Image (tube, rainbow, N blue to C red; front, side, top):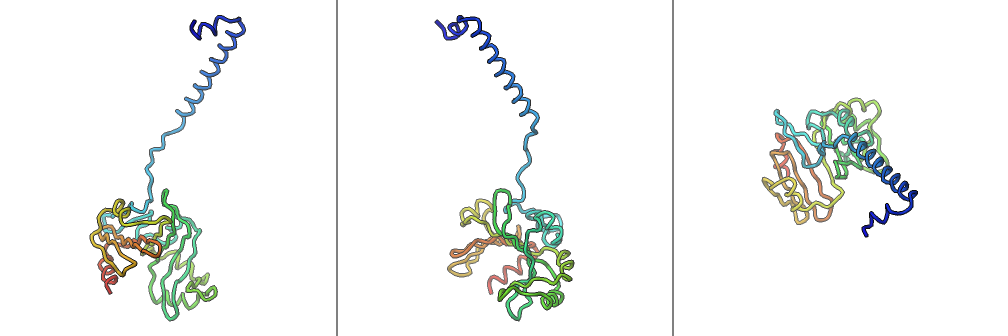
Length: 228
């Protein structure tokens, strides 16, 4: 005899119990289907990835939502957050550079460290350095509070991103394509140059890799400096 016949040939209470169980299963299934239908599909593509570099009509490059040479530090903080350290990085007898350092940045599923180098007049930067203070003997000089408003309005000139995973040449070319040129600085470091993207991808044998983004119109100057 079939299993279904055995089930429904028993005492009447068994038939009622099975009927109620089936009704309950159908009801739960309908509720779950309705909940799935109420959840809108997530069709938004992942943005802000290191290889997503946009070249704008004016020739500027945009990465991580930041347009180099145009987006100010204040505007960048609206996207990246204010959990960063702002300081002038300078060795003795140097003017240095004004940098915003994010120790942990998430670029989609990619994490790493992010440094924004700010574009500021050298004379003004020197005056800010005179008013700054150090923590111990480091090269990091923290700004005087009076100089913070000036720093907020400084545009981002260069972005350095150091991914938390090891990036070799094969992975780099699979994401960014074939570089226009490769410059081997020494036995430990090489630069994969993408001038049309404004990217210098620095591979290092004994340190972390660095993705350096700068405006494409500044790339020829940058390349010349690598060969000195």
